[in-house]
Length: 169
Length: 195
Ligand SMILES: Nc1nc2c(ncn2[C@@H]2O[C@H](COP(=O)(O)OP(=O)(O)OP(=O)(O)O)[C@@H](O)[C@H]2O)c(=O)[nH]1
Ligand SMILES: [Mg+2]
Image (tube, rainbow over the protein chains, first blue to last red):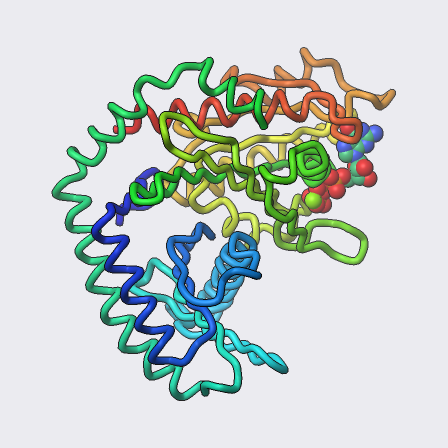
């Protein structure tokens, strides 16, 4: 992925594959919920018991956490710390980096175990890495097309449309 | 880097408030948070010291509404302005789609404003970005105080690029939404013409 300026665009079919992979992971790891977040803190997808959770804040804080740990890694001359584990009294967080660009979070409790989660995350990571490789390949190949589609849909936006957004907000 | 999800028809853009320590970045977000309809916003997260200085970042998601069937979301971040938090500033700056530079209008803060702007240019440069290429607006904050520099002098010192600028008093909200609207507009227009 070229640095800066390039948009991550996910099409319908890939989004479905991502969700299927997350669902499987959540079941096999006996997790409560799983999240996929981009390194800038935007939530890409989630599965499981997400209803009572503030997922947007979770995404932003996770990305901040990964960014800070990445900064620490650099100081120590490590490329990155690819796995973080936070243990709570009831719920635990397993955070890992997939394909160097997205963050996979699994929330689990004592019905599961760190060992099981770690194992299943490994498998899911391979799966997700393949999906993201496809997305990036497709983006490159179809960058023109995807962008054109977006541009035609977006090109008609006027200053008035944008003003209206604020009038309502 | 904006994130566009065709399936969910969502556009997410990241806007970063930058500027020297105590210039009023967090106050901008607090005012927006206070005024926006509860349905349109998420939590305001502040990772701050015990004295309420930003330690890592403030974050607030804002749902602007829909354009042409796409839900438009802004993710607003502030950086910690204190000089020694530079490593954190670099991290937060990553992937920004637009930047608001908040300047402190007080005479004694002019040097800090200039240093902070240079620091922003430097940090963007390290990521292969520049203020020429990014949506960028200026806010001259704290206009309510007695010892402020004239707008002409602020312009001369900080706005060599002649980007949109706004006078503000973030504590009472003056200029806060004008600034936000201006940067949101630029970011959305930029998306339109990207490549
Ligand atoms: N008089 C006046 N005070 C302001 C204004 N805006 C902010 N302040 C005050 O300035 C102080 C610092 O504001 P913050 O918003 O915390 O500053 P910041 O830029 O987030 O500072 P850091 O987090 O250290 O980078 C607070 O006491 C605010 O109430 C303004 O327009 N006028
Ligand atoms: Mg602050």
